[in-house]
Image (cartoon, rainbow, N blue to C red):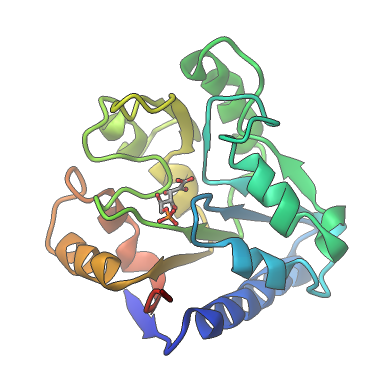
Length: 226
Ligand code: 6PG
């Protein structure tokens, strides 16, 4: 794991966006297409705003989320709204978007077709991951019944998840799909997540799903602005 600490979140977002552009350009230099998986959540919005104006052949890039809530794409609970508003704008509006929702009645039914759709796109060029204070990443939650299935080396590319606690079901890229990425960047803000990262480094992946990605990841941390 490589840990990079920044004095401010603004500097982190600028640096990671620049690094993502470089990684995507490297992929485009050697292949016809490139692919990018990004997190939802409250952290990455400003980074997406920086990325959208990058001078890349966006029409050769597929963008997808690392996880999605099983709600229609126009629901305020869908992470797709964030991607459309903050990332697929400006130059990046030319990118192809692979939704992780297909209208199936349940997440587990929908995940079967989505796994095929995403498998056709793998390997990823770049995967950006967030992390919760409970050490989940994407929607691989430590306590979820499907956690081990999502971490299996032969997991389908997309797995459904029941996070519990009254939250809606989700689908997540599996660890296999995320680990296919040539470049993995973990983006976290604040002291609580720094403590969670330290804990994850000495925890099994059953308790700390993020730990499965750390050996291959660049982790970017900055203090949280109040
Ligand atoms: C999501 C995620 C998830 C997220 C973390 C951190 O859509 O919720 O992909 O893994 O990155 O929960 O969320 P915050 O950035 O809101 O702290």
